Image 1 (cartoon, rainbow over the protein chains, first blue to last red):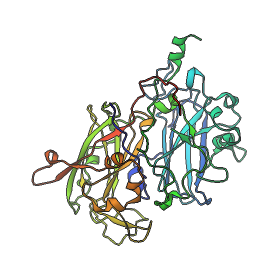
Image 2 (cartoon, one colour; image 1 turned 135 degrees about the vertical axis):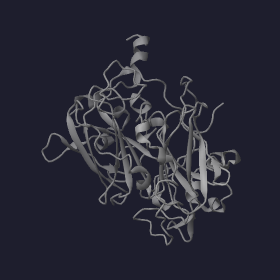
Image 3 (tube, rainbow over the protein chains, first blue to last red; image 1 turned 30 degrees about the vertical axis):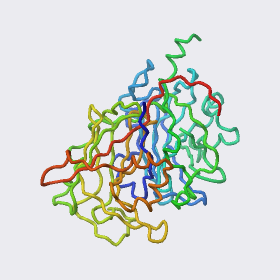
Image 4 (cartoon, one colour; image 1 turned 45 degrees about the vertical axis):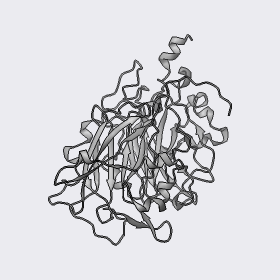
Length: 189
Length: 245
């Protein structure tokens, strides 16, 4: 016997009312261990228009590849300053920005280590259920062996890898294209 | 690598995939905003790794006592019909989802949101913000006191009206239980005309978004009550086996 999961519905255009209290672009507070980066980008629709009423949520492990969650049973230390959650409401240009650290590697299917990645959840008016995607890091050798990236058609993998911009090592850009040319890979979760 | 090691390194079991037609599609043309905001390329089936099974954890620091009573967030009383909205959050296996964050937002009694882009010609209420939060207790129960929201027009099509609804966002115990839904009210004649409600193909699943009148939870002389139980995804306890598709 099983119950049926409640149906998803859109957050609608007024999501800011409900989501702003817990919004934070500072995922890694002072004292968090790890290599600091900022990740910024824009959300655009199928016409290339900015999505100015969207929400981007980030979930990630700490620098050692440990999630601040009771089901992560790995024998690795939790970083008490670090929760691993970010939430950004997009601005008028569809922009979002997070300051965080590069996560460590976490195990994937069959115990194969995954490359460092952020899990991204996207909500907005016009999405009857949220989208899930991932951000990987540029110049990361582990990307070639990542068990989830391997499931993505090779010609579309670049949509999941952030780019270094402005010649800065710690400034990464990653855009969310909802539809059409350069469409971001989204997952059936 | 022996089996024990593999089990140690692998994540706990993943979550069951949704029941057929119990969730809305991304592209649903009657809801016009989906046309340019839905993915057009095939989705990639995501294995449920440790990254998906874990998820943000919130505690009592995220919720103040006044957060679950939307009628007491200002000096004065909001206008409208006071209601209690409560229920249980369970997973598909009927297990309570405990200490999980529920976020709520809604229009006021006149059908107006306190938001810059809402230009509906209906009054704002200085004593109503329309935002609340609660944590489920050790049995998965949550409870809000609020004002019954009004229906309001929107621009999806000629003479389009949204039925009265509450927006609810749940984090569950892990990312695969994350859910944002809307709670509707029983007997609302607008449901038949609402593209969002009707975007869910399965009738029983659709009706699951309608609260029921809850006599036992009413507060005499103060508030009527509605019960809304929420089901989040459950663990897939059975082993995957091949089937013909």
